[in-house]
Every structure is written in structure tokens, then in C-alpha cells.
Length: 123
Image (cartoon, rainbow, N blue to C red; front, side):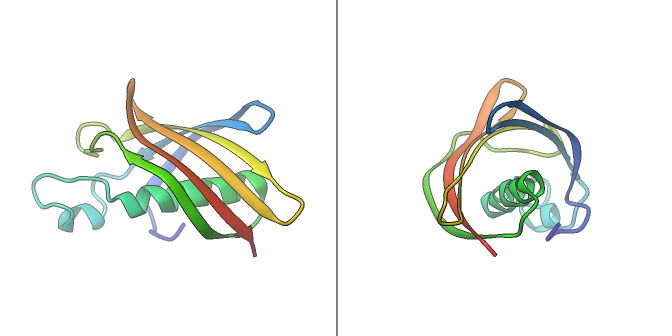
């Protein structure tokens, strides 16, 4: 975990071939939120991208390096004081060339907070 104690893994399930459902709880008391933003904490987008990478690494059991992002859509602000529990749907596929492609949708409650597609290289 790049940011120590930033989130806790609640559950991780493979719901079908390559499709994973992951639940995490964000630590609203983490230092990141004291600067982003004081009195009105908002999850930084780069932190969400890091969480997706870390969860993918854990699922496939391999270290990854982000190669590209596409279709990144931040749909709603994540306030960890109000909605610390997030649900991530990850569709993970691996190629013969050592690339890992991930399609993600992140939710709090029934609200879509983030959608993105990313490609990683195995390291």
C-alpha cells in the first residue's frame, strides 16, 4: 500500500471469470484529507487510481506499472466522512504480451463515483 492506512480491504470476490467485486473502507482520518480539503474532505482522483492498481496487483499476484488510462470519468465526489465505504467492480484481462487491462466502476451506495479503463505492464 503506497499510502499506509489509507484504506482497509473489507471483501474481495471473483464473481465470474475476470470480474471481481471489491469492498473497501477509506480512512477518513488519513493525512491526505487534511490537505484535500480542510473541513470538506474529498478523495483525490490519483488516490483512486492507486487503489485500483493495488487491488489489481493483489488479485493477479504481480507488481504492475501503469502504462495508460482512458475513459476516465469522475462522476461524483467521494467524501470519506459521509461515504467511507466503496464498492469497486474490476474487469481484469491479461494478454500474452504481459499487459493487464482493467475496466473499473467505483460506487458509494448506489452512486457511480468513477469509471476508468487502464492498462498496466507487469514488472
